[in-house]
Length: 147
Image (cartoon, rainbow, N blue to C red; front, side):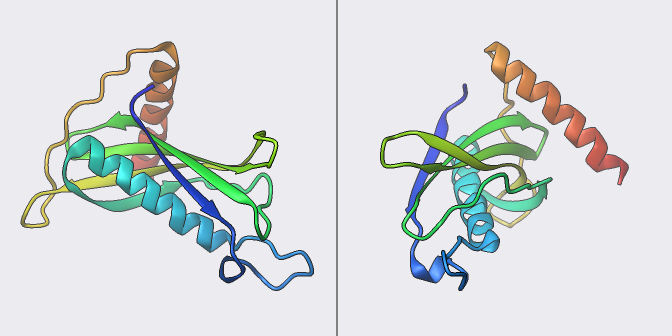
C-alpha cells in the first residue's frame, strides 16, 4: 500500500452525546476523518489541500466514551489536481483487536500559493490491493461526475 497516515484519539466527554452510555458524535469522527485525510493528502502532494467531497459514509459500529479510535488514511487515486484518500476508522479494544467504525473516501484538491488548483504527482498503483482500490476510485469518480 501507499504510505499510510495514522491518527489515534481517545473518545472524551466533549466528543459524546448524552446517552446513558455516551457515544461518539458522528460529526466528531467526520472531523477527524477530514483531518487525517488532509494530512495524508498534504504529505502526498507537498501542498495545501481543500476538501471537495466525502463519498458515502456509513457508521457500522459505535465508539463509546473512553474508546480508542484509530484512523488510517491512504491515497487511492490521483487526477490532475485532485486526489482521493481512503480513511478507515476503528475502535481499538484494550486487547489490541479492532472493530471497524466506518470507511470514507475523501476527495481533495491541491492548492498552489495563490489558492488555485495545482497539479499533483501521479499515483501509480503497485500492489494488487492498490490496483483494486484505484479501479474502484475511477468508478466512484465516474459516478460523481454524472451528478
